[in-house]
Every structure is written in C-alpha cells, then in structure tokens.
Image (tube, rainbow, N blue to C red):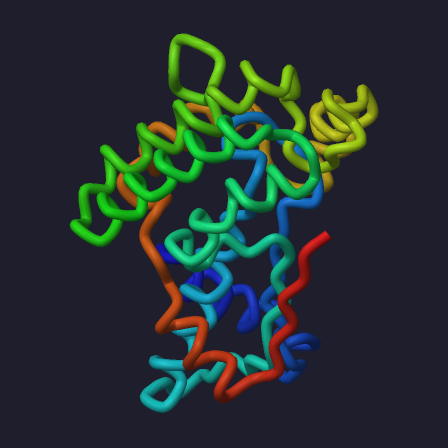
Length: 220
C-alpha cells in the first residue's frame, strides 16, 4: 500500500476528518543522523501531494488537499548545491582556497546530476560535505572541525537534539503511535537505499502543486 492509498483508507475510517482539508507538511527540524543537513520532506511532500492531485479527478473518494508546507526543502538539489561554497565562505567557514576547492567539487557533482550519474554525484557530495557513507571525515568536517550543519554558531550538535530518540522508545509512546516492537532507525540503512534518489529533483511536481494549492516553503 502506498502513502496516498494509506491516507485514503485512514480518511474512510476516521469519518470525522474525511471532509476536512489536508495540508501535507514535513521538515528536518530535528537533526537525526545521516543526511541531517537537508530535508527529504522536500521530496516526499511534493510527491504525495502531486499523486493526490493527479488521482483525485478520477477517484470516487477524494482527498481534500488544501496545501503543503515544507521546511529546509531539498526538492531540487541541483539549484541548491551550486551555492554551497559561496555561502560557507561568506559565513567564514571556508577560506578562499577552500572555497575554490569546494566550488570545483560542487560543479563536478552538478555535472553528474545533469548526466543522471546519481551514485557518482552522491559520492562526491558525501565526501565533500556529509561524510555519512565514507570511511573518513568529509572535506567540510576536516577543514572546519564541525559536524553540525544546522547552526554555524554551534559546531557540534547539542545533547538535547538526541532526546527524541529516547522518547520514542518509551513503552507508552510506542503504544500510542502503534509501532509495536519495530526498531527505531537512525536513517543510515535508509540513506544507502536512497543514494540514487537523493540528488534527483521533484521541481516539476512542486511547481504544479504551487500553481494549484497554498504552499509554504521555509528555511531556518
């Protein structure tokens, strides 16, 4: 069952909300391991919204999509990656020589994106910035000494950013959110399977949704 079908089924069961407007939201406001510098909500929110938008006209049971809201959206990586080097230089995390190297690697990454060499593009960016699936620290981590991408005033993540994992493991919480005995994942295994998808764009879907529905895109 895909996400949209699951939503339709849930709305049929919960009749009191079936006629209410749906706003799809997502963000990466809480750092959570690999890939924490960007929000995959920028991919799945437009994808699900576009799926609903496309199928609604032919459905007997319609989902009343009202709009979307996305934080730190990674919807179109190609248009984002090109600005990394200048941004990091402007906030003082890279010097001029480091900026040149960073820009050169970002340009290589974009070239591979244009050629749809998704794995190669992922590997370049991972070695340059993320350091998630490499055996060594990324170039960014080496030259800055920082592992936190969220706030350049905080070089490492604060301890309280990991509290939610313990909270989700509490028996009463697990029961309330109906996850049974499933293990809470830090995202590392998921990221391995998403390597070919990470740098692909959903820009056309996002544009179409923005043309038809209320849309909020924010960056912190």
